[in-house]
Length: 295
Image (cartoon, rainbow, N blue to C red; front, top):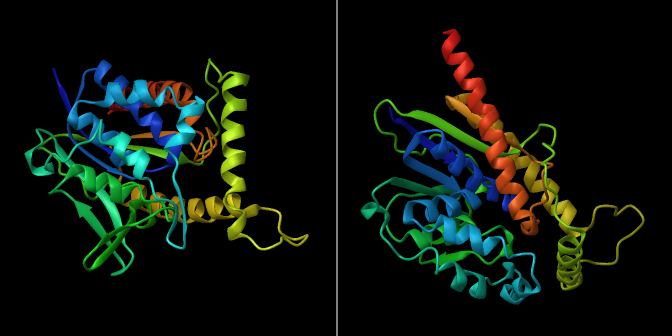
């Protein structure tokens, strides 16, 4: 007997790769995704799922430990964003095209933020690529999407786990995936190799060197640095709003991924993150089934 679910995927940078493992495990256990909604990385993974390209995307993202990934980063050094993203989004078009959202077989919604008009934007019509491009435009990192009367950035600014924006079919279970959860880190059975990590750290250090222009000389009290300060500030804001959303809309099944699993830009940990997504989904479903039997 099929079990329809309305699946909501949160943003969380590289941690959002865990959504792939979540989806694979849900389908393995007989759940049918009848509608899907996401913010930022959640919107991206959701788009590849509804377009049928998630496995191709997963295979590609597994290569992000290689030096070639650095070639995808095109620095803009503008006041609106450090990365133009032209190269990266050109690659993304191999997985996400301009299919109209309203023509999809599965209900899809993505969230962005209009910082010009101070409001949330819900994409449930129009180009799915445009929806993803706007939803993942992390403030100060990726340049925004400029429209005639709007400036669109990452949806996590206003609604990082859009439980209230998904279009549900009758009798479907609401399933939320929160990849910034304040829980202990689940240690995966397989670790990223030292070689993969050293390659990644080399690239990140090169990236940070490009950011020196945004900082004045630090005094002795400046302990965090640009990346850490930005990441911690945004994470705290997003986390508080996500907690309120989960409390208000109460998903039937909540799958938590620890915020300590990896940092926002640790895409080199893709295989480990997919595995963590599967493991946490298994745990959550066991808990849900036990609860259902006791009622």
